Length: 156
Image (cartoon, rainbow, N blue to C red; front, side, top):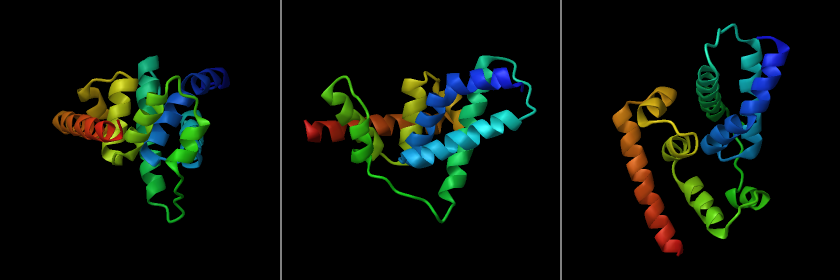
């Protein structure tokens, strides 16, 4: 990959990579490390990308794998979700409540929610990206919605 294409890809996808990593790690410093490692792999890869969608899927897959490797590290850090949420600017107060409720879910629910609702992938595509059967993704989305509904009713 030449420098110009890499720079364009890095600029276009850095936010998406960070959101995937943060959904997985719940820690902004770890998410930044995953972003850096993912982009480094993109720069070094010899993969011939056929389309922008191919690059996006490859980056998500690499970011998820980097997150998994990070969790194996004995140096894993934990960050308060509340302190990070304060640095974000939400348009409405209920968005911050939704963010907190989503981040309180188990990791296995957060990432499918993000990929399905925010990135717009189908359950089959989310399954391929995460290495899960489509039915498992559907079940996790269903359970995540139920947990969010319960959590948001309790708060409201």
